[in-house]
Image (cartoon, rainbow, N blue to C red; front, side, top):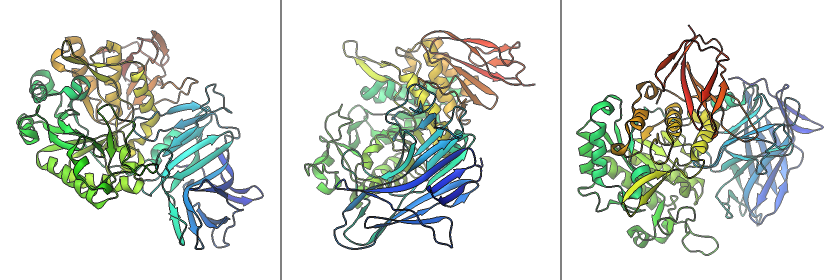
Length: 612
């Protein structure tokens, strides 16, 4: 998608980027933050007579260069920060480029925001100066951002893969900023040490003013690996950490027989619960014979074995925590001791590996190479955000080591900072967990449990991240249909998994599902959509940040009801002369554009439109 021609203007208002009447970003100023909290502001920009794409400014003891080359209306922004003199300049930890933004001639109305990692919330929120009513006080977005009017036109911004910094965007009043930093929490990483002359180059950020911001973001998201989507079963949501070898083998047999055998369920993914401990990736006593024998068992049925790991986390109880060198672990700057990972403590204290260390890189490569040689052909790498505690370079080094070890196997990332995994992982989780596996210890029967709005959250994130399909295959999480889910919720989750375009994995105990719930996983007309690309939701911004109702993929239209009440939808289907209800498997010959259809509470209607 081409953006209108971009103009770079240097005048009384300073440096500005203008895209006709679509968007204008004026009065650009750079700010640099030092580790001690000092903030330096740039002087006025100047441009060499020989170039309209290079601009220079001074910023205290720093020299700045801003590059703004434009191709087909898209400006590729790049900032260079230089220390020009020696001696005690301080350490540089953050740079930002800010200016006043207008879209379609007025204040922006909506922010298409993206969370930092897989599970973080993404959505479409109204901005305080816009027409919506629920403006987010924390109007920030990581990796990509869209600032739009009510019709979806405005500014699209997306960082390119590569570089040693985290890119985020911020909208505050009329000011829009691109911010580069590294590290997480209260301990930012140093981007450039000021004790000696040197230079730091930002990751490139593409910006464009366009009539369709989401379409432009899809065009900007590129660099992903080609991959064949997988279909199968994963142990986590029903069995949780209580899974046994017998559970896995039983499901391998079931999927190789009867109806399932004709539907392409070929992956058997063993999740958390097989290992001795986090960081001690050897089978526990529930898996006699080890991974190789299990891989051979499922291979005998024409299936492949997948396995879950959390490569950067190490339990304090694991052998590696006692035996590995101290420098292998991220340290807490406040104490000098090993950093305790605070987010995931359900299984006890966890340390984080520092993959900037060559020994850690070799360890990770050998770990995954050993599993590959044992027959594993699908790897889920979880809690990858922990690899960034040591900085972006450390995360990149660790991911590359993992990729080297997994060879040609499918690599699915989860809990992952999104942009750093582009070109490394084939697929990535783009939303939160669907449910929680709970154990009834009296009956000794586990079951997946939904506590609140998990299904809604899965839908919101997939809608808000659908345009990232050029970075990796989108994993909306599992096609869960049992536990305490209603039948309509089960249809929603199966539909979302099918429309995401990435892995399609069941996760119930299939031996305990009722026939009507099994049918949700064996409907060939719905399963035929899985792995065939990512659906595009209509542009339907709303004050409550709910996902859209209408989603489209080719001639398929999904109508979602995100409320707890039955609703009637006036369907937008231009040119339709009938439809087939894929869930009911019935023809709807009287269906036309503007037809009104009922959609049950927390449910979905899935139609294949007939335009003949």
